[in-house]
Length: 313
Image (tube, rainbow, N blue to C red; front, top):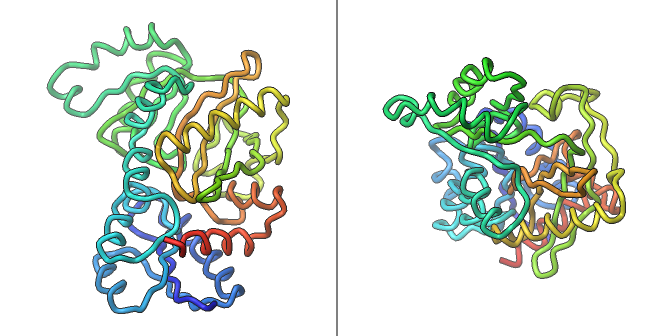
């Protein structure tokens, strides 16, 4: 049945252009599926724009601030407009990596050891003096990253203690809190989960980038990264990866859709969880569509499944 579907894209985050690409591709798929598409940029007029249209469903093609932190979800809840992806609660928890990692630790879900600092602790509490102790406890190399940001923005892998302050300053330009995390040498995996009543795990994507890690450029440009679907890991590692990914999906109370990013220590066969994404990209180089294709779903079929389960709300 033909529906009026608002595709929410753009917004004010640093991932705006990436979001627009996702939104355009989803819009094209929705039209092929016979739906009426209303493309909406996220700005100060969004509430008026949503109210002025008869909308059956909002497809959230937003990434980062406002799209994955619970903001747009809360607006849609107030307006009684069904939407794709997890609700307010999972978005709030997953967007702040410090909160989500604390939840993982409380449930014995493997995640790299870490400490966090914020701007006030640097300015008022002299926490910069703790850096040598943190480095000693975590070891080098370590990963410095913003606590609330997507697409690997602001992340640096630091190999020497002299480079840590600069990496922290850079990360703090993206978020008020910064994470110093143990670097795990392993296979980088993206595990997509789809479905509401009976969520299922799609084939995992193994990511092999030409750079030190899967940064923003590696994610957005064709040819910067090689992908293997399904991932080239052992059957026992694959089993552990799936168990951990579903545990994360359930721990953050996701419904309908999520993507869990994992580093698999293949020697110890430990899947370390980095984060959960509530609005995975839908571009030509995005990981969720790759997983869906490996599971036998075309892009249009993937979008159709997301739409149908979201309309049940």
